[in-house]
Amino acid sequence: MGGILKAPFMKELVRTCTTMFRLGWNERNGGNISIIVDEGEAAKYLDTRASLREFDLSFDAAELEGRILAVTRTGSYFRNVKVDPEYNLGLVRIGKGGKSAALLWGFAGGGGPTSELSSHLLSHITRLRQDTRHRVVTHCHATNTLAMTLVHDLDDRSFTRTLWKMMTECIIVFPEGVGVLPWMICGNDEIGRATAEKMKDYRVCVWAQHGVFAAGNSLDEALGLIEAVEKAAQVYIMVMNGTVRNVIKDGELKVLAESFAVNYRKDFLD
Ligand code: 2HA
Ligand code: ZN
Image (cartoon, rainbow, N blue to C red; front, top):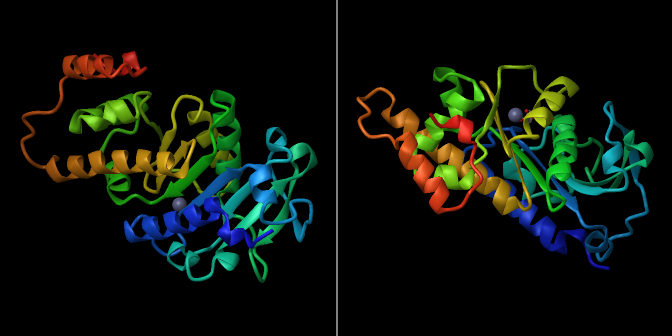
């Protein structure tokens, strides 16, 4: 056994937190990440049966019973993750019946998992039902995506159409579109359930006046989704006060999606 920080998934998590901070999407203690870790992979680095302490869960995570997750700490600053990973990150195992979680490593000196744990775990449950290879949920305050929620209609179809029409990559990267939630109080089970509901149809859920959640089979995939959404939102914010002459037309989006053979939301095009 070697230190858990030598595990490739931990190295990637630390690197991703640093990248996201540098992108300006995780100011102060903004944002959080959780990754479902393969038990065999974790067991190479630590005793996965030894619990340091337990946390109660306020929602039903029974479908994740026994799963091991690497999670960012509540209140952690992404810019500090690399400096002190054992304080800012934790490895937890979901307990019997999905009512508690045991700490296997991390959250040094107290503290627990992210305040958005319900959004993370309930989204993991929803995405695993869609795709057994699903592994990652990540949340951040991507600047232009957040800005776009201040000036744009907040329904899924309208928001998706604007993103798709800004930039050719979008309908290929997120052919199912994006979900959008209205402003809600964050950090509770209600927003967790609403986010997970959106995750039935989408891998990206935008929180108005707050940020974005994305799911994927890897950190690269989840972050890549946010990168594509954020880029399109940035272009939208740049051009919205000018005379926009040339967005991608519905017919062009259709031909594009078909030529890349992606399963796009047909009802999102006119
Ligand atoms: O505190 O981003 O949504 C971290 C957050 C809450
Ligand atoms: Zn947030």
